[in-house]
Length: 484
Image (cartoon, rainbow, N blue to C red; front, side, top):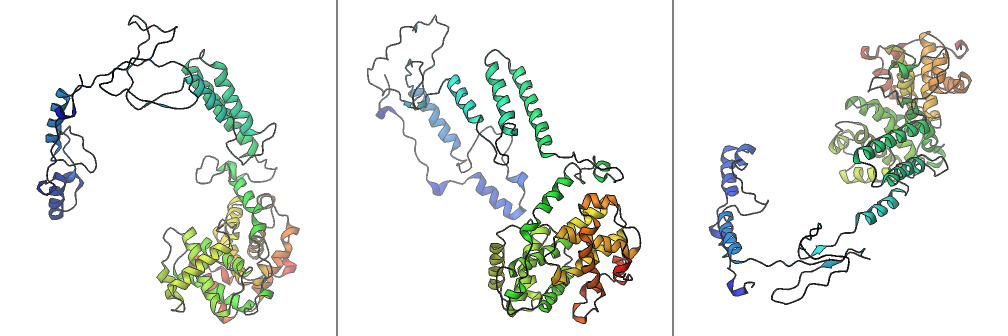
């Protein structure tokens, strides 16, 4: 007979004011000795398991009461037979209340209730959830796997995901109970390998045919993990495909309060920020690009132009720098012209205008790729960087794609050094023929021939240093001297 409520022992609640836990004592000692994890950790010899917020002092007393209650209270478990049929929905099977003489449900005709049967009937625990048979769960799993897992590929007859994953499902379903677990795992591995090969063939990764006479730069560095030669060509092809999205138009006509000269002064100031904070060159190019994209969509006043440049450099620093400058640093270089609230508000507005898309193709990244593929020396690459960075102040170049700007700057540097012309290797990796970039080359060369102004000398002074091989002092060439 089950014990009544009066027979159950009542566990006394210890006063909270008299309890001194081990954790509190150790915390007091930790304040004196310093924070040490080894002193505060519990002893490994103790087998007692406590929760995160449990009271350690009451553990032994509660354990003693639990032992006494277990000796006194012995609940009776009744065996309940459940019919083996598929339930239309998951239901909760409750145990009959105590002190109720309820007969067990009648067993079906094909069931045997004797103990000599091979099937063992386990007693159900109260509030136990009935489980569905494995066959039903398997059918549900198969139906779920057949759905599309990605929207990157259109579903066609030779679609990658629809064909490969259906092969995996069919292989699992055809084996059923006949195959062993080892054979199932081996077939799954073979199917996954097949998916990987089909994906590589579909995306054409690392399968770019290099024509004769072209230096296969990716193949030479195939085993170098830092070169990512397996898909480097795919990365730059993808960046070239995104260039039309980030090409600003001729916005100066829609800016009544701005001029080209004011934009050149702003870019020169941004170059000074990059040099003062020792930021990456990618940060500078991204900041200038953000300024042009913002001005092509929003009309600003003259007194807000510097705030736009500061917010653009702040965003570019957080995107590309390991340790970007702080907000106070940008407020300091603005000489207190703006408040913290104004800078943060401009940052939010600028991000909204570009729709939070900062993966903008930059000419500096293309230039580095082209120079490495052609195996050019560092002085030639530095001269091309000077030409490219000096063109940031030229408003006439904002509508030219970054990949074409990089190719034109590199070709102009080769002509100024008198090294070589436009080789088949450069034509293959840049994707441009000489006649396609010649107009841009002339624009860059004319920009170098203009008389430098004293207010725009930051780039020239920067590349006149010995650390940059004094490339700004390289003699210029005329357009007629260009050769293929």
